[in-house]
Image (cartoon, rainbow, N blue to C red; front, top):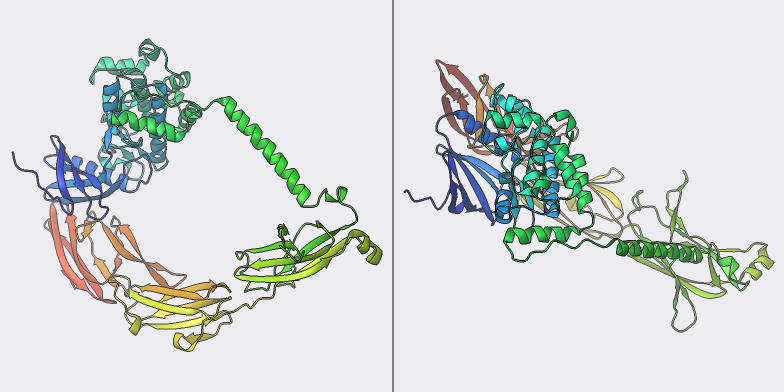
Amino acid sequence: MAKEPLTVGKYSDVTLIARGGMGAVYKAMHPTLNRPVILKKLTLRGKSTFGERFKREARILMDFHHDDIVTVFDHFKQGSSFFIVMEYVEGLSLEGLIKEHRYLDSIISAYILLHASKALGYAHNRGVVHRDIKPANILLSRDGAVKLADFGIAASAEDTDSGLTSEGMTLGTPSYMAPEQFENSRNVDGKADIYSLGVMAYEMSTGKRPFPGAFTPELISAKHKGKYPRPQKYVPGIAKPLLQIIRKAMHARPKRRYSTVDPLIRQARKMLGPYRKADLREYMGALVRGEKDVHPPVPRKRIVRRIVQYAAGVFCLGLILFSAYKSTLIQPFFHNESYGRLRIEVELPGVDGAYSDIPVSVQLFSDDGDEIPMVAEPVLFPVPAQSDESNPKFTTLPLYILEGGYRMKTTWGGHILWRSFVQPGQKKIKDQSGTWAHTERVLVSVENSYAVNLKLQVNDAITGRSIINSARIVAENSDGENFDISHVTVTSGRVWKFRITADGYVEQLYSLYVKPEETNLTLAADLLPQPVSVSLIDLPDGTELELNDSTFIRTYSRNSEAENYALVPVRMQRPYPQEILLPPGNYRLTAKLKKTQKSIDFSASSEEKVRLRFSFVDDVLSIEKQ
């Protein structure tokens, strides 16, 4: 037996986990993530459809980002083999857990069913039908996570199966397949996956399959009739909600099943409602780790929950009453004429209309000549602005305080204003002015503008090297005035625009508001080199392209409104654009058509135009650089 390689591509510490007829599964170390990953290998010998399914599984999973679906990081070809690089789930499959415990209790079955359903719901919403839901494809980690895996025979609405599943073809695992999947696997929808979920729930709860056996006429007939032993025959104590899920999900007629996984998710969540999520996950993890004497989590007692709810209600009511008292809605009924009513108004200077995120607060202290204790911290409410007013205003509810001397501290951003005043009682106010209101209007006067310490960094976005010496930077203030950066002092409290240019690079424009209290600004700009234009001329229909041995490239995207570019990752796929904008560098373009393949190497610098002409004559593909 040949010795297995220690490295595959850029992945090191490669060890064999399992081997099959068409490939193998390895564990390896990711070079940048610095954590173990799984390398799933397919060696092509025979039908090309196996390779197409393998690549499509990678494409589907690389577009998926869900906690309950295994993550795929990469896929590549080495020699005659294809590889998918995916998340390493340390633990075992649901199939293995059932074998260890014979069957699972209703709590853990509902927990697994919930996460598998959420994963399927995510896939179905993106037009993907799994078509092979079974315990072997549910991975369970040692920390209690549930992951759906193996989309090898999945059907995607985007590519309509790409002809990989012909009319009348049967795909899947017979014991878990829906009745309609035997007739035509190509056209099944999400209800086929829901049926398989029901079968999986049956097996988790009983340790037995409702339809055991191989692909036989007897099995197909039993599925179409919907006849199978009742789960209670094997395990009498299965929870009723779980039995309802099994019965409805496994209905032989698709129209009588759940139309989506959403009701199934709601029922599973209702079953798990009395339990803490952390306890359920720890329970799952303990089973996977094979710990002895593992006990199910204890449900939270309803009486305790009701007491907590009642206490919370009493607390909220008390808080409302206390707030009402403090806000003086009922204080006049308790205070005599020695108390005066105070309303505080705060006016702030307008700062280019951008003041709403600057915090402002007021604190009121009794001026007793000794400890100066705080009396209140009134809540400020914004006053609706008038059309002719540019300065924001705030006010408080009336506050009843004892007559005497007071100090007021107003804080706005990094600024503080102290002032003192004397509050008269109600009787004195009424005698003098005929009203019981006494208003102190506080104006916060602060400087709107300060000099800003500006630091600039300009780098090449591709190489990271500094190009500050060749960059040109122009600053524009909110008054529309333009200044060379070396001849202007940037000040706070206004909007600034910085336009950064350099020969051979795409211009960058930064527009930002500098708050009054912000006096240090670092502007770090990465400029993209002007793009290389690669024209694809006379590209034959059906050609598949790869750039640097990958279908993923970084290309320039033009923003017509900003008249600017951004560098974005995209997948090269048909129909290909006539022009591709690339960063400067060295490239290898590979074209594949039918059974022929041709590659061409080229290099290009900023603003260079590369023209590649294709021809396909006598089944020979050629590429010429013009």
